[in-house]
Image (cartoon, rainbow, N blue to C red):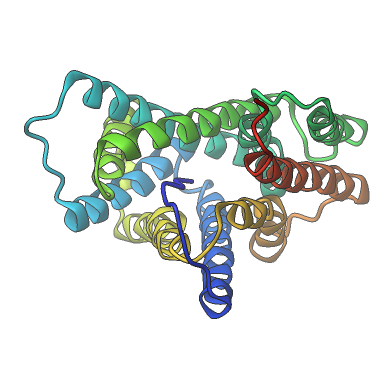
Length: 296
C-alpha cells in the first residue's frame, strides 16, 4: 500500500486508534476478497476484478477530481506504470484465488513486498528473512492439499505486481498530489481489463445483484482500506505500519475459513507463519537500518 507520509509526532492515543484503523483495513481487504471468490461460480474472476477497480475508480475520481493539465511526460509515464502494476496485481491475485485457498494465495503473494523490504540491503543477516520466507513457500510443496501449480504461479505474479506497485506508488506520490495519482492509476487499471471483459462476454455484468456485490467488493477491498490507511499513517510510524501489514496472510486465512470454509492444514499454517515472521523481521530490520549512523 502507499506509504507517503512522514510523521513527526506520535501520541499514544492516536497510535492506538491508527493501529485499529490498519487492522480494520486489513480485514476489509481480505473479507472483500472472500466475498469476491464466493461469487466466482457466477462471475468470471476477471470481470469481478473489473467491477472492483471500476468502483474504486469512480469513488477516487469523485473525491480527488485530479487535475490533468500541465502534466509532464514523466508524470504520465509514472502514473501509467502505477496503473499497469495495480491492474496486474489485482487480476493475477484473483486468478490465484480461483485456484488455491485465499490464505495461501496471499501468503505466496507476500513474497513480493518482502523482496522490496530486503532488496539492496548490505547486511548479510537480512538474508535470513529471505531464506525464512522461501522456506515457508517451499513447505507448501510438501503438503499440496488444495494447491495447484498454476495457482501458485498466479500468486507469485501477483507478488511481482505488488512489488512494482510499491515502487510506482512512491514515485507517483512525489509527482501527483493527494490521491490524484491513485485515481488516475485506477482508471488505467480498469481500462486495461476492458478488452478481456469484452472477450469473455458482459452477460454476467448485466445482473443488478452482481453489479451491487461487485461494487461492495470494490468498497471493501479498495476504498475502505485505503481510506483507513490514509488516516492511520498520520499517527503511525511507517515501521509499525509495515509490521501490521504483515498480518495480511493470517487475515486472508481467517476470511477464507469464515466465508469460504477453507481450512488449512497444520503444515500450511507453519508455512504462513514463516512468511509472516520473515516480513516482520525484514520490516524491523529495515527500520533499524534507517537509524544506523552513516560511516564517515
